[in-house]
Length: 439
Image 1 (cartoon, rainbow, N blue to C red):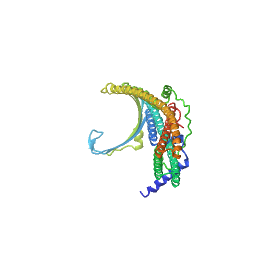
Image 2 (image 1 turned 180 degrees about the horizontal axis):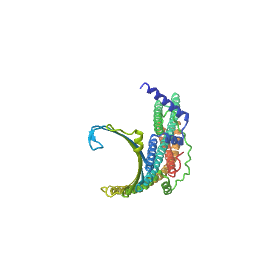
Image 3 (image 1 turned 90 degrees about the vertical axis):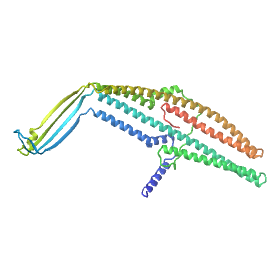
Image 4 (image 1 turned 120 degrees about the vertical axis):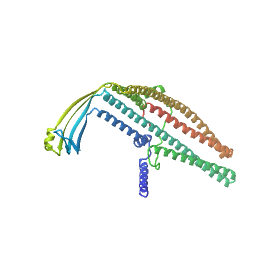
């Protein structure tokens, strides 16, 4: 523990320094870093490599298998001799051989297996791309949450500054006898509430930053900052969801992965049916042996290896006749798997359609919310300015001032949330059309 603690501290310091040296992170920076370092993506990448190995194994099944063998046998005790008598004899036998076999025809199962694994590799690769999309969307959501919390913190700190000036103003008026101690106390209480709101906003911002840095696999959120994008949402035109869906069917990896698996299921049926067909394999090899007997002289090792040398070639035909309905059931199981994959593909398409429709209607709702929030914020600000002027001239009490202030703060908060909800909703629609997530 004593040895690992300094190492952990050193790694932590290095990560903080990296975050600080990087400077403010844009959304593109965050997504790029997450795609490179996210652990779940690395695991998904290993699955792609495993499928590549499976494909390599299938292609290798076309190659011959070669094996070398060596044997050594010892025999002791009574045994039958060449002159048909029994005697106590010790014998040794040494053999060497090298053989190879190669599949000639396997009911097209090898070629179909290769094609199936090629499609499975494409499907797993599409799954990998889909995982990248999921991480990108999660990063974008976390990024927007930070932007929203930064806005709230700015509003809260601005209110603290305003309330601090009001406390100073009332304190000066109290010294001149133009304000009561109760008014000062009430304003100090309002200032305390504003500071509490600012503290809560700062804590929410820190938690949002922590969520994003964890998605990026950064060891610590210290020194991490993001860039506030300059967004102009005026005049944003929402695309037609039906057109988005048509484009997404051709581009989205979630759909492609299931289409590849559906194609692969056809080859699974062919592989199963291949067991009905005969198979042919060729084999060949050579070998030799050395033999000694204690009761008789033996030729030298070199002579026996030369004289006993043998070679062979063979062709084997195997015709399936009956195997307890195993092949039939395997074919039926493959056909059922194909039907299930067809349903899975249809379900994926419907899920994609639902996601796009939800994203579209969320964008429509966010746009309406943004417009109403702007109007509400303008009205709340006008009311707040009027009440503030009355309050400063002694024509409104502290309660009226605080009510107007709280209404204005809520309207600013609602406007910030509506702005970033609409921003994310529009970018999400762009993302479904195959565009990169960026602000």
